[in-house]
Length: 449
Image (tube, rainbow, N blue to C red; front, side, top):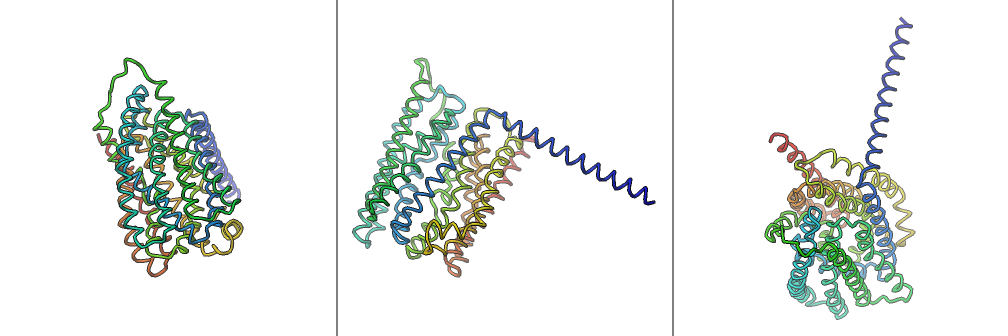
C-alpha cells in the first residue's frame, strides 16, 4: 500500500511538473510572438514616452505645488481644466476620425489637412466665445489676479486644438516615433518652465498660467507642423477624396465622449471639489491624483498604438486574442509599479511635496486603485475603436456618470475629499465592467452571424 501511495504521489508530481512546463512553454512562445510582433517596438516606445511624460509631470507638479501652495495649486488646476474641457468638446471627436481614416488610407492625408485647417479656425472662434462667456460668469466676484489669470488661460485654446489635430495625424500615419516626441513636448516644456519659475521665485498666478498657456501653443505648433510635413509627402496630383465628411463626423461623434473621457482627462472630480470646497482641499486632492498618472499614461500609450494598428489591419471581426495581448502588456507594466507606489506612498508624499500634503496619502491610495480599473477600461475601449466600434468607449463612459453622481452625492458630504476618491474608484470599476460586457457582446454577435 505504501508503495502504491508513493507511485501515486510521484505520478501526481510528474503531472504537475508537466503542466507547469507546458504553461511555461506557452508563456515563452506568447512572449516571443509578442516581442516579434511589428507593433511591439511601437508599444514599447509609446510606454517609454508615457513614462517620460509622467516623470516630467511629476517634477512640474512638485515644483508648482511648492511654489504656489495648496490654494494656488487649486486655482491653477481649475484654470487649466476649463479651456481644455471646452476645447476637446469643440473638437467633436474629429481627431479619432482622422487617425482611423489615415491608418486605413494614407493617401488622404493632404485632403484631410485642408479640412482640418478649416475646422481649426471655426473651432477656435466658437470655443473662444464660449470660454469668455464661462469666464465672465465664473469670475464675476473673483479677485483681479484670478481674472487676469483666467484670460491668460484663453491663449492656450489654439495650442490645444493644433496639438490634438497634429497628434491625431501623426498617429494615423503611424509615425510613432515623431508622435511620441511631440506628445512629450508639453510635459517636458512645462517641467522646464516650472523649474525656471521655481528658481526665480515667480509665485504670481497670472505668470504661471501664462507660462502654461505658452507651452500649449508651442507644443501645438510643433505637432501640427510635423503632421503638415508628412501630409505633403503623401500628396499626389491624382489623389481624390474617398471619404465622406459626414461619415468622418459620424465616427467622431459616436466615440466622442469615450475618447474625451471627461472624468479622467478633465478631472470632473476636481471641478466639483473646486466649486464646493476651499482651494486648499482641491490642492491636496490634486497632489494625491499626481500619483495616479502613471497607470493612465501607460494605458494611453498602449491605446495610442493599438487603435491605428488594429484599424490598419481592417479586421472583419473583434479578435479577443489581440485585445488580450494589449491587456497583458498593460498589466505587466502597471501592476508592479502600483504595488510599489502603495507601499512607499507616505515616504514619497512627505519627501516630494512636504508634510503639508500628508492628508493626500490615503486619497492617493484609493485613487490608484481606481486608476487601474480606468486603465484596463481604456485599453479595451481603444482596441475596440480600432475594430470600428468607437461607440463602445462612449457607452462605457456614459454609464459611469450616474454611478459617479450617486456615489459622490452619498459619500462626499460625509467624508469630503476621501469620499470623492472612493466615488471615483467605484465609478471606474463600474466602467470596466460595462466595457468588458460590451466587448463580450460584440464578440458574441460576430460569432452568431
